[in-house]
Image (cartoon, rainbow, N blue to C red; front, side, top):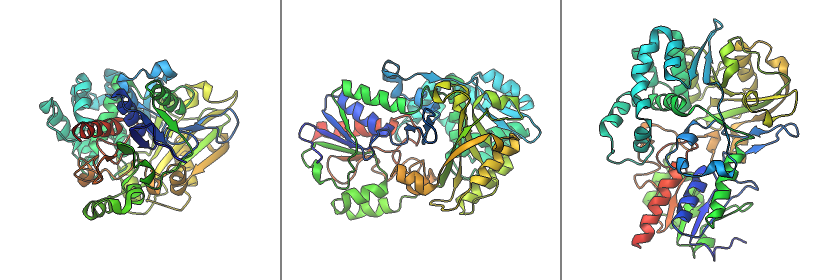
Length: 475
């Protein structure tokens, strides 16, 4: 039985946005209870021993450049509650068929130097953003509004709104620099010819130069644990193992914030929502799915390019043209046998994740939404292409198809880890023009389906809580 007698505010879902919303409400003095369907809090920020005892894998998200840059998370004493960031020597590397690799270093000048003839062009693209990164994130990691730094945001927007394929070809000349930019842009989970795909590339590059791309020592679950522990110090609590299928149990609560996507909101709230609002929610478009593999290895990945052995994240996909083709194919419903693979190797830099003699790695590629096929062979062949002997090093693997991901976390509709496609119509006003507000008084959305963007930074939850608090004050 779900009890709300002692809570003015209810949050449904304990992902990073749900917990961020709960913390902000608790900071404002509201008693808060978070309900989580799983037996473990965290949503997409969870860890588990998937294959061997004592070998810890991050089940969904794992690398956190935006968490350390988050305007809200930066204000929280996460390190006091057990979060220790691990920074690999290189944020990311992008291997090429000639045995070399483009690299994304924490140092902007070092990254530029590694790009040779494109070094100056890279500095012109990213340098001004790095110089004023905090101002830029404060303006861009927010709902649509008049910015405090309009010229800076305009500079970013003029580049960021361009298709990544266009910006790479117009600003960069070398195969390596174009490939590096394409790998960054592919985090958008959109075809690289789409408007706005340059923005994630620029933000991720900037984040590398101001904060690196860190892991949480011991696993992503430790980030969730810290958020929960801090919430508890504010008087909030998290109740696990309680799936919410209706708003009826929360009739006495003053505020209800839902860390769910539009499809789940339709199920939970049903006819209590207005017909017009339900129609708009039903039109919300989800993005491509993901197909993820976790491996236990008997040795580090035998990359040909030495730089890849020093990188926490490796973008496996070859050239700009190959990545363009891969992402476009999956978007169109046809997974390619040469997918772009986002690959991570945390145990190289965090030995607490595993036991002696074993290493862990994970990789995922984008596939059509809800794809039911198996791309294990294609993913592993791409890694083998740049690391001959990788397959022989595999001791065990754990595979998660789009359906598996959705079963693990109901927000991952069709395997979409972004809670909605970041297409132009959903870039600023999502899931509808009312953003966090629903048509039910006191009920708000606080998931990654709301602004500013998907990712582990908590800003969707923070701004939803701010909106809810403003409503409560005036009602």
